[in-house]
Amino acid sequence: MDIVVSGIRSTGNLHLGNYFGAVRNFVKMQHENKCFFFIADYHSLTTHPKPEDLQGNIKQVLSEFLACGIDPEMATVFVQSDVPEVAELYLLLNMNAYVGELQRTASFKEKIRKQPDNINAGLLTYPVLMAADIIIHKANKVPVGKDQEQHLEMTRRFARRFNSMYGVNYFPEPEAYNFGSRLIKIPGLDGSGKMGKSEGNGIFLSDPPEEIRKKVMRAVTDSGPVEPNQKMPVPIKNLFTIMGVVSEPSTVKHFREKYASCEIRYGEMKKQLAEDIIRFISPVREKILAISSDDRYLAKVMKEGAEKARASASATVRDVKEIIGYRKMF
Ligand code: TRP
Image (cartoon, rainbow, N blue to C red):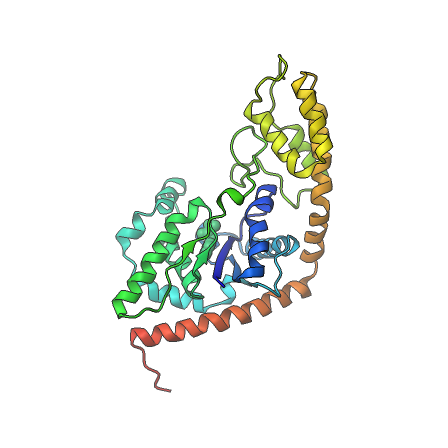
């Protein structure tokens, strides 16, 4: 059985792409592994959110993950800032992380470009905090996307460095758990790449029906095929991909035939697609609403999650302090 840790950005509301991608895999993984899933709300401070937004986002993201089937009875689900041991391990790891290597991190260089007037030390040490999140539970598997691979590489380096510095074999070196081809990639509605929050091309699980209709009707198409069985341009293929996961097979077949015979009307196809997305999302959206308005349930999940996570984290910090040389005097 693997120990799995994954952090979820507290700023990211879930969209259809997440639903068919990482979230599905988290839900599957929790059955076979010891999973720790947490909301990375310390990390989110690097962008200076307003106090009222910070709390709201945590609640929303947690509700969305629970609504999608992450089960707090199976996985340890918690909020990062409820586990102060993470901050302590982060402090200790910072002493063995070199400014040079942190400055060379791709994500840091990108932040310098994107937010030149807020290059805080938290951004520089972001990979150290992420390493603390992971190794504090001695995880050996971390499900992350491509954009996080360098951070994971640094986590391995920090773990290795600690071990060799103190001549111990304490931290395992965690591997990326790459879902790869098992992920269904959901494209965005803008005719280009995949669906993403920052791309502004997403349909969110909490979008109300009207919003979904608007977004789908605005999706990029073209002027239509001019000869039978013409090769499909990417924006149209994208609509069919989304249709493939939310609509009945007979619906997909109907519009494919219309496309092949050049009789397709994109307006009609989009109307159908919007309704099918709404039908698909509705039960999840209702669950999100129910969970997010149940503060007692959320509080219980957070409290129990924090207790389980702290039990695991405090044991590690205790060991680490002893290895470093702190001796208990009382
Ligand atoms: N940096 C990750 C992201 O932006 C979030 C994260 C924080 C994380 N701590 C983690 C992911 C630990 C995996 C493990 O998506």
